[in-house]
Length: 279
Image (cartoon, rainbow, N blue to C red; front, side):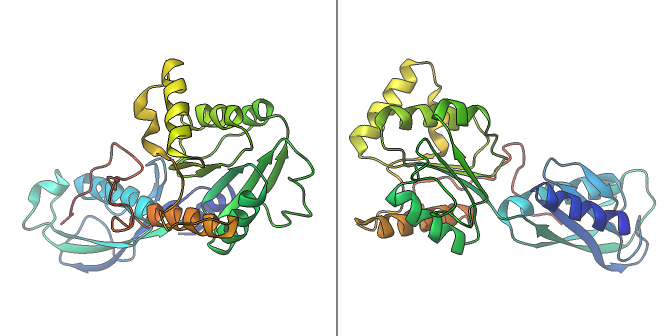
């Protein structure tokens, strides 16, 4: 199993999430052995095996959901009742597979290093996010103000955007000081695999930016990940309160809290994965 653990280390170094599936209980004849392990990467590829066949396919699907939800799950198979689940194998036992997520800290990109950006950076760090700050102004975006940032990018936004490639499941916040730069960043953000995009501003400003982007040919479906005006509606006013509302909204999405976000359909990050009970 050493190769699997080495692969887990490599995945974490690359900032990628995965899930580890382990057979924890068996009875009778099964197509593998107790304690067998399989690593499922965030793209669905695997290392190791828990027996192959239809059962393994279902474990892979469950593992991708576990990565998305960041919650472990136990998958049970009774091969006596489901003879077709391992077609071609003569098995009549049962097995229990524990699937646990191995997730990295979520990546957060904050555009705009002013007062709201600074407050959000501080609270997001304490909530476990890895933060990259992006701003055109070196006086705002620097190591003195952001000593624990994963990265600091100081450049015109068009230059900065060309060099940024958020991984799937990342978070983007748009706090720039101008309407035009907000629209520029949002146009870029909706074409990334970011899970969450938040933009600060009034409803009128947001509607205007959406309207302009539609006129430029941006498909309305791409706005589904956009939270604007950003943050939970708690009546926040100073930067510190705004930051709390914004980070709370990101946590609610990350933890799939429908009670906090009743207007959203809490769907998995991978649209090709269907949530279902297995076993």
